[in-house]
Image 1 (cartoon, helix red, strand yellow):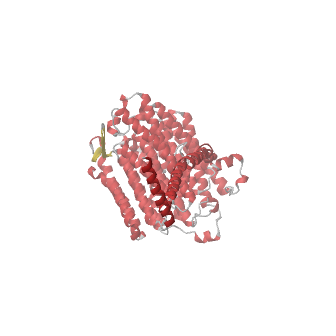
Image 2 (image 1 turned 90 degrees about the vertical axis):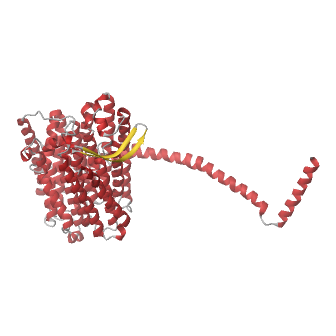
Image 3 (image 1 turned 60 degrees about the vertical axis):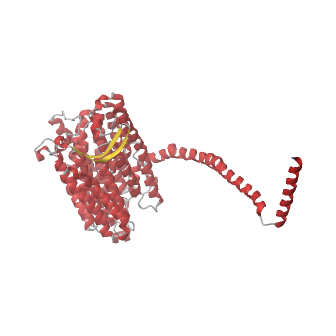
Length: 628
């Protein structure tokens, strides 16, 4: 069965090729079905592999397909590794990916680029599967770059819009910064260990001095900062909302942004050895979580609110990784995939109902008009806010417990982040679904529930958001925490909690009580008192204007990076390109042209010129003979 692992990425690749070459000849329904069935087939094989892994010796197996690169001491096979970590991520990618594909059939049904959209979507899933299946860092890097390419294609899918193209370019360029760090990390791994396969590196990780390991870990983390949108490389992700909503769901829940988490967990041996690197990961994670959460407080674009919540939740995951809670972070990746895919697809359903409107200030009163969308988004909002027994509570609480054991200060900032998350998420929910409708008459007439191809994935994801927390319940599975138990084979340093039950219950109680208090405050503010987000920015208080404008980070980057580079590039263009290089090239052309004009006089069809030339030639010959 393990030998069939190649089928998992193969099916989406086949779907990509069929739609890519023959999509224009296929109807939309057939094209969407082919793409969706391809991902479903991968999910079925991934599910079989997941159960097979439990019975394998050492719970892992490598399947070598062919010899890929062989040069000197460098020998890299094209091989797949199936183990508890990769098999679990396969289920997330293909399971959530399939639901998003089905949803996209309804969401994109009127779009002229329907077949092209599903072509890109299948390619996106293929590269993400390649990323998690490779048994070495180079295959991971190929998948890493592939998802970067696909994000560019999908974010800029509506390429006739210049703003969307700029967002796609921004995502691509910022990720190149992180990718350079990742590539340097891979090079240093090869220099240090003579190999880049996981088995060849991790088993002898300790033979290298700690400073080198720290450097490797930090370089890898730079790559993760780009893909998973951590400070300072986070600004591309909110702008990525330019793409169709299913793309946002796929990027945020099942593919691109989870790649950084996967890479750190896969490389956990380095972070287990290097306390410095782990501390950096934790500090950057908590700073990103809190920073993005504050920005989310005053955003009014429904997709950007969710985008900043993703940045914040990813920060919490990195905080968990930094304190050594690797399996807890994977647990939160899983539950986050459920409720974040649900929230984005729910937001897409709202936008669909509103005829393309994304500003929550122009919505209101929708809960009675799109009931399925409302109920499922309500579940997703409760889950991300950390209210039991929904899935987000268990995974977030588990991370915070480990963080408290490591540092009460970091725990406090993590708790504050969770409270802010509950507030801005319920702000979004209350302003969107409660109160009176604030849109136009045309929008009011247009509002309707989405088709079943969109609502069924919402219902499935809502169910997963409710029951997903059972993955962390020992009583449910009859074993120690299931996720910890499942990932034991790939985690080198086990993070066993030493907290007393009394402390655990106290922390849990504080988390729930604070979330409930914040939700009650948001209800009083936005439902009972009918407070609405300010439409006139000039009326905002200075601190509100600062937060609403995202602390002017983009403007800061433009001022200190983009404009100086543009200025230097302009100067180099003017001097080197135009004056020097163009001057030389144009000078040569002008000289040849002038010489040609002179030579052309020799043969211009003028008989008088020919006679004169002949006479001069004869005279020259006689003079030469006379002189000689």
